Length: 401
Ligand SMILES: *Cc1c(COP(=O)(O)O)cnc(C)c1O
Image (tube, rainbow, N blue to C red; front, top):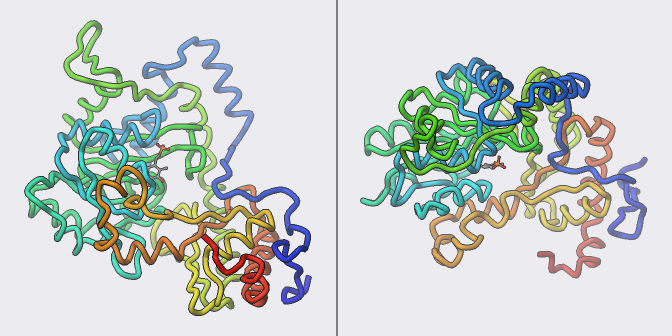
């Protein structure tokens, strides 16, 4: 295939892929090992309520992360709600706007106000200098987000939290298996929250976990996860149902055994993207620090329209027409979603870097379902799109939204 000559699907050609390539296709791991665990679970008739798989899963994660307590949850959103509630956060909590909406919703669900903070210039992570400016007398905490599995500025946020007497937690939904200065993510701040949703690096269908070194906080979270039961017939405070099921833990345990292979494939794909995208001016791959542990779960590209002559939105349409289901992230920013858009109509004025970033970022398919050959084709599509931008913009009527 000669790239410049490729007839793009958006211009009437046939799609490059017969089957869609998705972002976030789940990893499966060893099917037989999973099915054996399910058989054992059925024999035991112990399906939930802190069963043996959940306990084993928690032990394995705590060990890997190097933390005293891991409390498995039904998902990370409930994990965030329980962790913030158990630690006593209220009033206002500072979060980045460049994150998945669950970071904000977990707070708002409890009538805690998420205060959106900008990303640092040139970064995808919460800007500690801006955090400092957003602290008010009502602020009780900060939640940093390790976007794409890359740690936010933990050192600076820890310093601010200590100096200003604030709680500090991390939404580590993307960051299982990643390190910060050689130490595994999961043991920083008061607590870190992982997601094991099907699209995440380690998946348990749905699932999550809160990791902490704080004994009291861990105990409170265990009670809260189970309706507040401190013992049989003994409820001490308000709780919810945040329990992970045995079948979910069985999937999590099975995938823990395949993590090295999954990382190897993710890394192979990341390096292939780096190679095919390197010659394309204005297409910038988000790079990982190879001196840290890293799960390479996300292939993130920033499109600089001033160099490509074609916008991120137009490129996403070109790719989708080829059955490459690229996604905009985290578009349009949490502050532009309801209810926050109505609550804080002027928030965007404080978020210039986020506003710029959400117009430029897209996520490309990777994972075990994507081959190097697929990635070469995707590179050729992007190259052809840049070369044929004039025709594409005409077809799209210039106004892409
Ligand atoms: C996926 C995700 C969540 C929510 O995780 P669930 O397990 O689906 O509830 C929270 N924060 C971020 C940054 C995420 O990407």
